[in-house]
Length: 311
Ligand code: SIN
Image (tube, rainbow, N blue to C red; front, side, top):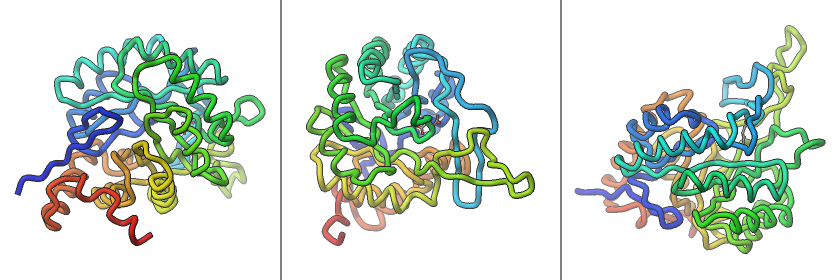
């Protein structure tokens, strides 16, 4: 039986629903191309800002029993460099039919617009707006996703500065994610990415009696947060009409299917690249294909949202 794994996110066709999530392997065009050749249906860059950022001191990432904890601190070489990387990556990805999603962030609402305008010069297929990094020092940099009014302002400013479809990346670390999703959709978001990492959390080295991350706290990701991500995606898919790119602890084809069942259009894989390697995208696709065949579905469209009736 022939099964169609393709999906369309904000008008952009993905050959399959698996997406390299932002923050993992998305800085150089060679690596982005390797991810696409390994079977990802789309590739998201690491988030970049107008100016380069060194990020936090090492250690910035730790693998623990149930996932990862990270406080990378949004390190990136700046948009000028990323525009060149994205141009080069796009040329390679286009031949594979794999779209590229450019992730941006900024320190002010105004700068989000400027970042969107600059990154658009590279013509990514989609722009993801990271307003939800938990590793920012609240004293200096607000988590824009925490406030519906601010999140909507960022969305409007970005939309004013680009014609490329825009995904707004939301945080689980809020009281009411549905309220934020509704306001960004009303403000013009073409789609929503949900969720960013959970927390921040803390892991201590009890021998030294200090936190293992130099930053002290960090965003928690991996399998331990997947049930929370599934619930957020379910809530958002019910509340808004725009498509959702689901992210959060997805490690296998089974996890991708779970996200599709609650309404996701495409599904990001991030931390799992650390456990399963770059082959995770093809493995997940094989698992999805086997599931669809076993249940006699011909496409993901037939499956999407099927669990919502029971939730
Ligand atoms: C980081 O760079 O600290 C993580 C990025 C994010 O969670 O958005």
